[in-house]
Length: 149
Image: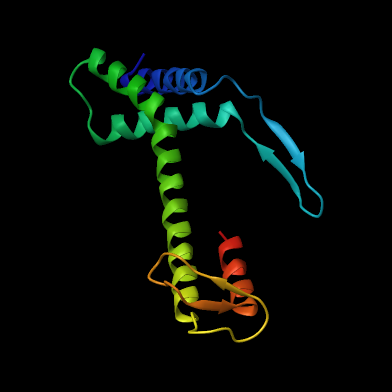
């Protein structure tokens, strides 16, 4: 077999190994939610294919001199391929959520008032707002922002 075939095959095996280590094999599933089109969840098959893709990228970007090195790198890339992509996506979600929290905190701090304005008031503690009061309408807006996370 050629080197690229070895790399792809061991990337598939690495992706499969990752799925077993990550909680087991999940079959593909067609899902239909209310008011939305039919959706295909690839399950473990998608993760295994990502492993092969990661192995191919590793092979294409730096071809090692021996077949043993190719096999080793392809297998390791297959295991780490989907894990790296998941970590990236989770990191992007965390950044987006942190930005929303900061915006909500800034909104709340900007609307802290010295006394009661009307309705029931809530004391904010933290984020630089100490001892002030926020009216119920402002708190409702604050909670809308937080629920958008």
